[in-house]
Amino acid sequence: MSIKWLVKWVLRGFAAVAILVAAGLATLLTLLWREHNTEITLPAPTGHFAVGRTTRAWVNEADTDELAPSPGTKREVLVWIWYPAATTAAAAPAEYLPAPWRQAEAKYSGVLMSQFFTRDLSLVRTHAASDPELSAEQQSYPVVILRAGGGALTTDYTTLAEDLASHGYVVVGFDAPYRTSLVVFPDGRVVMRPSADNPENLSSDQANRLIKRLLPMWVSDTKFVVNQLQNLNAADPSGRFTGRLDMQRLGMFGHSFGGATALQFCHDDSRCRAGIDIDGAPYGSVVQEGLAKPFLFILSDHSRESSDPASRQILADIQSIYGRLPGGQLMITIRGAHHFSFSDQALLKSHYLMKMITTMAGFGKLDARRGLGITEAYVHAFFDANLKGAPSTLVTGIFAQFPEVQVETR
Image 1 (cartoon, rainbow, N blue to C red):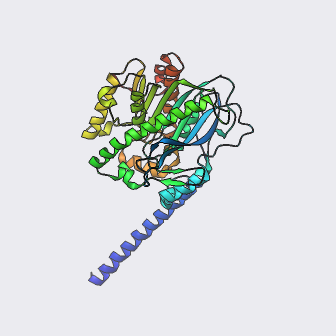
Image 2: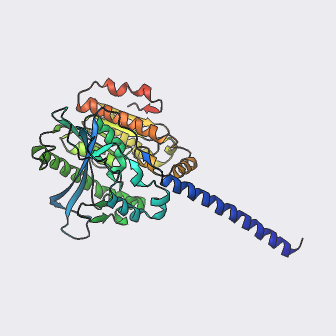
Image 3: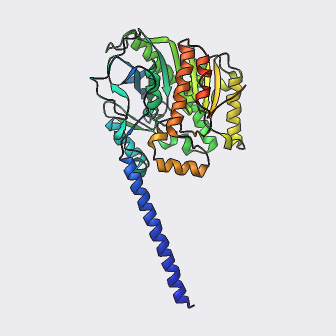
């Protein structure tokens, strides 16, 4: 065998492999593009109320934003409100994410993520109507604050928000500049979060220092939103929410860092009656001092992280808080769930991408709709028991429906 012939043989082999790789990549991109352009409807709410959604933009004149590049910039929030609606027949369907937000999101995340690895958000169908009247079935409704995780958008939790509203709650989520990945205001301003304010871009020590700085801001933003809701209840300029918000029955839930915020807010603010942390590592004084409110921890499957010291410390902190809770406490793990099983991202990120990630990781194989359904059931049952006075057996009674749920003991 001559060297010349061997070189030709090797080159032909490389060419064949390159052709196969190119063909495989082309096939994958075709599948991703087809999936991106396919309409998808979010899971239907399980309560009997129709759901409405509206937005507000509020400026906190009392506080400046420490993260803003210009000194003296006032804090702002963009608020999303889901609520029990009178009727939705004449109201336009609420877009999953309004067009200006979609354009900013595409620019922020890049072509590959927005055009191939995520569904076209203009084709995501919700179950809420845009700005209908509040349902007259009840004089007032309990209020639950929703806080997204990390830089996630509030609308990433539309499934959970719609479901809770359908059970007779006013659900209020908000996005904050320089904390949320991006915020688009009604006047057209787009505020992007600098990479330096994203803990995921930092080393462990730097991230912990930033988190300790961010948590008081997130809690302060929550207090401001609750203050504004009290003002809205006293005198809503539109008249829709005047006297209709039962601020004596206030709860909060959040995912990831939003869950940590719910935990600390319910520790700090007496207005919080009950809260839920969904897969969020706790931070702040609540870790040392504990909590005297009914509280629920919903965890993803962390069984493969038992050897990681940081993960063990997080679980120890959660168990420490949980062990000191009064009545109305619960901690569950959803087997097979991963960290994003609790948001719409489990549905809206490419099915092929999610399957690849979970296969490589060896866990997180819970069906996306199943995971959201389990979370919905526990969220509204827990708030029903602790904000509406429903029997506590309502929460424990749903275990049998979900064999994936593991109840943690003290």
